[in-house]
Amino acid sequence: MKTLEQMNNVERAYLLAGLFPEELPGILTDIRQRVAYLQKHEDDIRKEWDNGLITVGFWCDLAKRVLQVIEKYESKLLESRRLFADQLFDGYNALFAIDCIAKYADKGNGSSRFQLAVKMLFEYRP
Picture 1 (cartoon, rainbow, N blue to C red):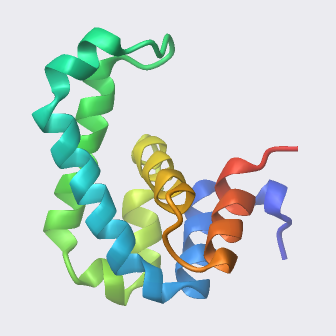
Picture 2 (picture 1 turned 135 degrees about the horizontal axis):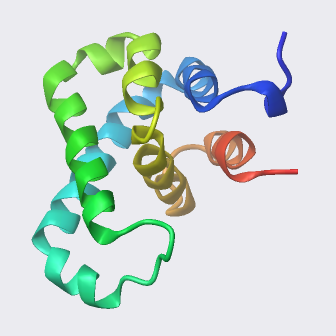
Picture 3 (picture 1 turned 90 degrees about the vertical axis):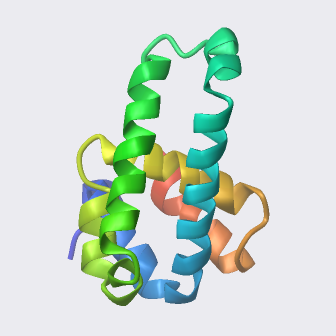
């Protein structure tokens, strides 16, 4: 069995989806809302963007790619934690998906156990 430090993002998402399957609909809804906000306010976000590592264009592209995955697989993402993890948390898509899931948990969504699991799996780095 791998330790937390040895797990990649797909494995972490797979574990989270297995532990908290009831949270998946809320997570997907929240991602959709974040993408919609980003698309609607892209010009304003561009003016205030201060991330030196990622451009606004790249971030918007990631958001669009993640939304395309959600629209392509719809309910299958809720039925298969493997598909959920593989499609949303692999490669660059993971950057946007992890940001969304961390913000979702930080806003108080889900149980306290879920919020702690998100912090442990995606935010804590020794």
